[in-house]
Image (cartoon, rainbow, N blue to C red; front, side):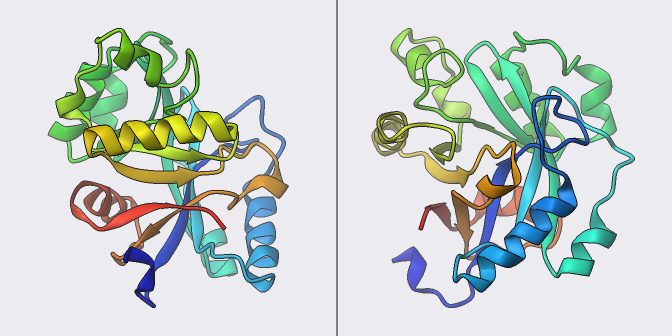
Length: 220
């Protein structure tokens, strides 16, 4: 059982902040403070990834504030593709120069191929949701399933039926699973997390773990 290891690291891989997501009401420091509260209450949360909508700021670094709270703050992006939304990690300047991240109909195959070539990864978000999740596009047979390693099966903004649908997709196609709160407000952070056996301290570690490691969606 994955969760019997005592040295797991628990990361919320889907969060939005006031820094770049116009529909979010949470500051990064607000999230960090709430994570500390949750940890004291016994919840498992060691950090989170900011996956701002349709954007990625290379100049933003959260290392100092994360270190202040003893937590991990990583950066990714939530992109909109022809098979719904995807969480992208391992983004570099080459990637953002090549793609218009504000495009809401990005090719999922181009995104997957490009990120793989630069040592990144893209993961379908809230995979069981209609329209912005992958499920209905699988039914339409327009998803390059062989290029996908993992999906978000546990999403804090999805209902039970939608998460159950995502979990069944993961089982059917043997995808790994991640969890993310999809938090836009402080109190939601850590609602769903991903449990990793790998040690993670930066985005490179995260991508390596997501590509090659042992992990799974986890919710309290």
